[in-house]
Image (cartoon, rainbow, N blue to C red):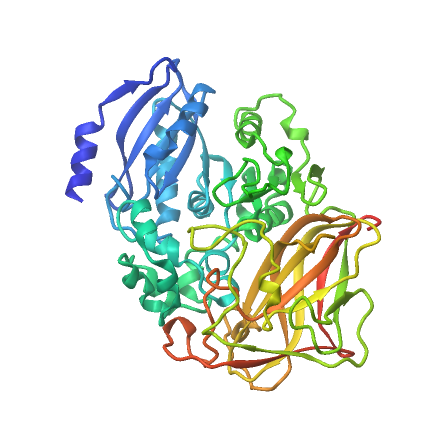
Amino acid sequence: MAKANRIIALSALLWAAAGGDGVRRHFQVAIPLRDGVKLAANVYLPPREGKFPVILVRTPYGKSGEQDNAVFFAREGYAVVAADTRGRYDSEGEWYAFRHEAKDGFDAIEWAARQPWSDGRVATMGASYLGMVQWLAATEQSLHLAAMVIRVSPSDIYADVVHPGGTFGTMVWAVAMGRRTLMRKELSLVPWDEVWKQFPVETAAARAGYEPPFFRDWIGHPARDDYWEEMSWRESYRSLGVPVFQSGGWYDTFQGGTVENFERMLAEAPAGSRGAQRLVMGPWIHGDLGGPAPARPDPFGPGSGMDLRARELRWLDHYVRGAANGAGRDPAVEYFATGRNEWRREAAWPPADAREVRYYLRGGGRANGAGGDGALSTAGPGAEPADRFDYDPADPVPTDGAGGCCGESVPAGPRDQRAVERRRDVLVYSTPPLERELALAGPVTLRLFAATSARDTDWTAKLVDVRPDGYAMNLTDGILRARFRGGFARPELLDPGRVYEFVIDAGQTGHIFLKGHRLRLEVSSSNFPRFSRNTNTGNIPEKDVTFAVARQTVYHERGRASHVALRVRGGS
């Protein structure tokens, strides 16, 4: 604390100019908050004197990392404020993820609007955590908030970040945030394979060497209770009359939340701001937004990249400055249709011509692995035997390609699923080779009729495109902890052997299956370490030190017609 105060006090008057760019820099400026805590900020002003609209960035990853972006926008005529969030790097206070971000954000916006170089209009900007703090600050209703530019943000901290599908999925990020500064080098030294394998998960951060104060609190609140409601913006869209430019990646862990934020703002925000909502979705993972898809070899071609910052600037100029640059007439949605590998523009998401089509799970009771008899068909099942497998928490289905986010221990992006699909505990259902293209645009939802021998277990879904050569590329996936089948606020254990209907949100996709390809669905009970393992005992899995093997049964018969619901475009 004393060190942070000293840095701000000694450095607040230091100005510097970078070689030749003319941008005026003011380092270590103190932003006072209502409780007396001061945030440390760097301010970047355009080369000329005057009053400017402000772009505010608040980050827990070190404000100096925002310099390149700040200089770009300062040269375009914006004053840019990059601030360390409370308790991080040079800012005062104690770090506790999300807890103070709403009020701190409001105070920082008000401060920026009052500065002599500000014209009173403040836009916020940033990705991931830097996007979440924008949503939280917006709930405080500052009259000076003019726009938000948000990349890869979830729609809910409980459901999208900490407890996706009711599981637990943020260990690497939490460990990385276990000290005042981000520990990139230290993370590379952690033996993640060993850390992941050990029970209980509750002690994993401590075993890795860096436990933040919130880690056990997160595990101690597995259901959506008041703890999570205090850091949620899901009930605020209707009062957020602010333009928002959002972008995300099909292979980002927050892709579903990014789309939901856009959809709900378009539907629920005050009418005057709905026309200013924008969404860009590309084939990117969490850390590579805007660049070419980061797969080797790249399955999407050189056209998958985009100058995202140029689009953000054009949009800001129109909605903050009032520039007559035509941005107000741009389509609301721009997305990269994987498969055909082309950019498309739409007025809404899902597109107006996308209708729901159900693909039913079919087969003769031997869908285990890609060599089994599992099938997908638009025709519903009759009297068909169920499929069965054993889920052993000691030998979970490994994550291989996923919505990447926060750590190299989870491989991200599009990858070949054939090794996973050889396992007996993965049920595989496929269409015959398609006779024509099948264009999908919208949510992927699995409705599963299933039973288990356990008091609690997990169910997973993964959508896959199978090429004629056999390459099986993952598109999107999801998971549901069975105790939350009735809602995340109402956990209820199962009656072993009883058949239940489970609804698994498997995310969003904008994909075109080419002629000759096959549509495939994988069903299992684990996707590890992307999602924590269920121990099948009925205890809180992240606190459990024991586990049991669960006998799983998946039904596809008349009256129990398990199916995956897709949004199919046009004449597909």
